[in-house]
Image (tube, rainbow, N blue to C red; front, side, top):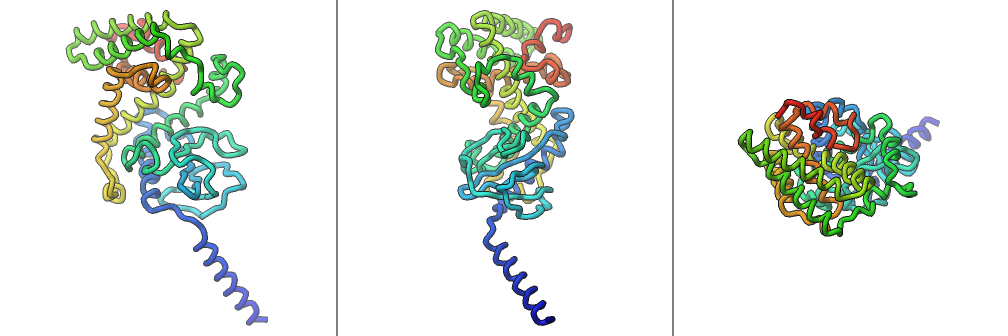
Length: 343
């Protein structure tokens, strides 16, 4: 009896060892990158957006063969657990790959759960390419998780009445905005360039004058499109534009008030956060000067919304406390009533 028991224990241990060897595992570089994103979120998040740390930070990392689910409170039954990872402060689960390897998006991606999940390929397979930009981009998507976790977010989005029967949410990408209208293109170019002029004005009087020109261009642009088109434009500035702005603010804060751990700094493709912050800011300014609405379409709104965030930093540093109140319309935050005597 005793011999049989010992044999059973030995066989069980051997089976568990073989099973563990057959299980996939996160690459070391991916663990370091994810850990850095979570660490920055914990240490700096609330300094950019109050209460950001309370938002879900669920991630589905997509690799060529497998997908790894981290920090998700409601994993579906098609995932297998790899156990708890102390560096990631989470159980890690896996399944065979079902998503594209170049994705960078936040959405309810896990069957049976409405928790917004960042679906992201590894740095090499996405537009980020290297570790530091990838971490910052992950925090862009994490900001979308903060947006969608706000009370009544989905109800308020539905109240815009822009879906036109689409129940999948794809209207946010495919809305029939008049990108190819010659008049709308011309007014959008005026709008973008006048925003760049205002942002780059250094003297107070010059800035005040150029801000007035921008606000006038904004009103002209609004008059050139329909009410629904303006609601869609405003929604994209609020949602995607401020996510791009948040990328910049996180990278800037990490560059000046944060020291990455040695494991991240010694990655082969590590670059300082200062470089990433500068690159994001330059991209915003360059796109404001050169973007063609007919070519960029919806993504043209990213830099414009980010630029408005930077503009609001200049005229009303407390604007972020009103951002989730004045949902889907940065124009209200730029109104004469809200600007008051701050100029």
